[in-house]
Image 1: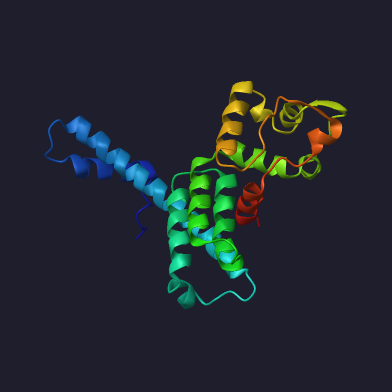
Image 2 (image 1 turned 120 degrees about the vertical axis):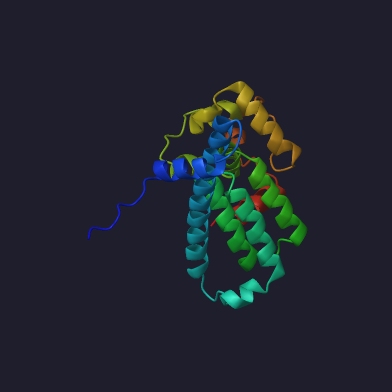
Length: 222
C-alpha cells in the first residue's frame, strides 16, 4: 500500500487555520489569524534551528573548548547565548548573525570584556544595522577595507572622509543615511565624527575608530 504523500506547507497552514477557527465567529478573521500564527511559528523554528546549528559548529571548532556540561553551568556564557539567540530570532542579516556568533565565542576567549560591557555590546548588535557594522569596520582600517573587499582605492590627495566612505560603502552614499549612521556611532563613543571636514590624504586614510570602537569590533570579529 502506498504511503500518504507528505503534506505541503500550504496544506498544513490551511488545516491549522481551520482547526484554530472552528466554532469561532467571525470565521474568516480567526482563520487568517491562526494561519499567520502557524506560518510564523514554522519560520521562527526554522530560523532558530539554523542559528543553533551554526553556533554549535562554531563552538565545536574551538580548541580547548569546555565541555557542553561545563558551558551549561557557566552562567555568564548562558546569559550571552540567551541574549544573542533572542537577537538572532529577529534578524535574517548574515552580518549580524556572524557578529552574534563571534560575540558568543569572545565570551569564552576574551577575559578582558566585563559582563556589563558584553551586555552593552550585544545591545549594540541588536540596534545596529549591517551598515553600522560595515562603517565601523571601514573606519578602523580604511585602506585595508578597500583591499579586503576588492574595491579600488580612490586616488585622492585631499578631501573629506565622506568621499572615501561613499566609494567603499555605496549603501551610505545618501548624505541623510550617512549622517544617521555616523550620529549613532558617535553618540556611543565608538568613532571620531566629522566626515565632511576637508583633510589631507593622510588624514582621510587614518583610522577613525576610538578605543571603545576597537574593543567592540574585537568582540564581534572572528
